Image (tube, rainbow, N blue to C red):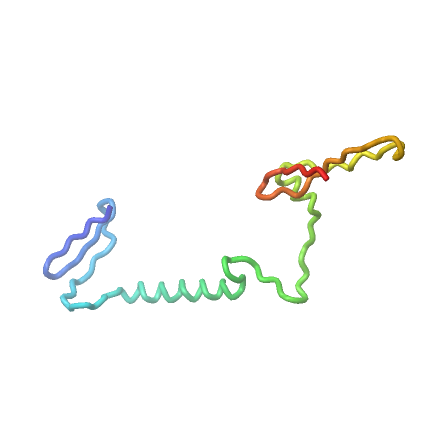
Length: 119
């Protein structure tokens, strides 16, 4: 909770009893009064944010440009990360003329769910 007190000359704000703002009171209408140190800090923060956005792209993600070398990862690594077993190879029939085989395969999960698909 912030406690704000003011008199004819001063405006003070306290957070948990500690003084966090102490300013001369302005009686001007429709005017914002900002501490110059706050303006300078805000300018520096905006500049740092914009520089980071240009370097990494929206959301802070790295931007890959033509000619960049990027790592490749096997898709099975993602199965391992999400605790999914790799799909087993379908059984091979011994005699195709007399044996009927039903094959069940797994597809890549959507949103961490495993779905079985039968052809």
